[in-house]
Image (tube, rainbow, N blue to C red):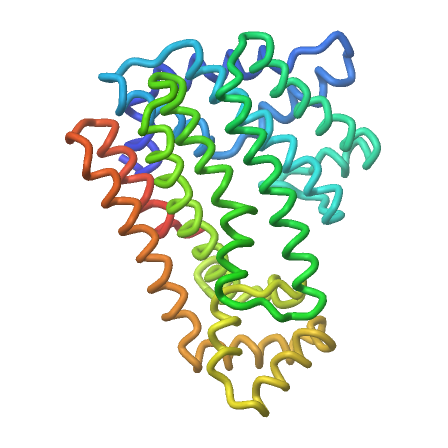
Amino acid sequence: MKVSAQIREPIEREMELFEKKFHESMRSQVPLLNRITYYIVNRKGKQMRPMFVFLTAKLLNQGEVNERTYRGASVIELIHTASLVHDDVVDDSYKRRGFFSINALWKNKIAVLVGDFLLARGMLLSVDHGDFDLLRIISTAMREISEGELLQIEKARRLDITEAVYYEIIRQKTATLIAACCSLGAASVRPGSEEVETFRKFGELCGMAFQIKDDLFDYGEARIGKPTGIDIREQKMTLPLIHALNHAPEKQRRWLISSVKHHNTDRGRVREIIRYVKESGGLEYAETRMLEFRDRALQLLREYPQSPYRDALELMVNYVVDRKI
């Protein structure tokens, strides 16, 4: 059995019902919107985020979930989908998971409005049912995602990102949404309990490991036979490059900064940067930090009794660092 199927097995029934409820939550009186949301639903990804919600809730509630759990999972997926639609507009991207993006098929104006609609639906789903604790969790995540993106843009202009700033950027940009998933799952069944914060921290640690793994893909050769260098071309300061800069002699440091700033579209120069980062131990350093985040997440989980849901969450944490794509 594939790892993804093993993770999903203890929540298979909930995920099937969730998909129906999620589709229903996007329904509109506007036929154009319904065509676009139908397109979105039928090109869904691995649905890792709602899976975190259900596994956390079932771990903490003797294998049971409630309507708040379903609403929490729907809200997080609505917000996440909205952020992806907006990201594709911002990045001028025409593909998403191998399919045409919303802006490629319906243009930027419609894509932005669809993203706004999904955000509004997510907010109203919580407000209409009085789930104000869940709304606070997701609103905090939305604020932090925006702040993280802007912090990264600001720092990329000067390439002065320290390791501490890098961790803050990925905590806000990536980890905060996974943290919200886990705290939503906890809050849906144990509102106001200590577990809401415990599982927020658990999700944050998973998210940190997840993003560092993404950074490493830029230097890996498993998928296409050669490093992509996309992050370097986009002047994104990832952990392997930051480590190389921090330990480079002044001459090499100036060469690296100049290369990323002024020669980031030169494929030959990008390959040289990648080679330097590898030779300086940047990949090994990033992998060590990634595994530290993973181990801290697993340690939090092991404070709870063994169950199919804890096992699935452990598989999820390990999948985050072992995945090939």
